[in-house]
Image (cartoon, rainbow, N blue to C red; front, top):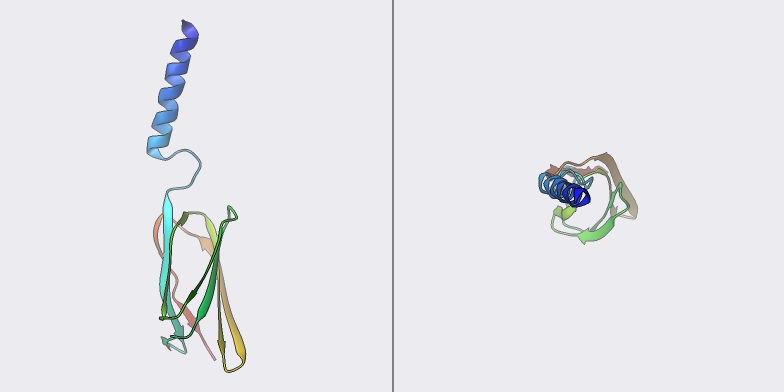
Length: 112
């Protein structure tokens, strides 16, 4: 009978930890957004952006409206690499930083 009580307490503790977010999965989902500019003006050409989380999740997209957005990735140390091609030049920007749960903003300005 004693083992049943321990099992019940363990199940309650696991449920409580899950409900308050203490399961080791971070603080919740993050999203990242920002403007893409060239010399301070909106860049409407294709911008290839790769997002890589510390956990190894990788997302790649091409944006072409001067804006980018990634939704629902784990909050953690995140690497973002953006690349455009202008007049025969390949311009690249990279940033590593700890993303938090919720909204994160990085405006990317390329300079010629």
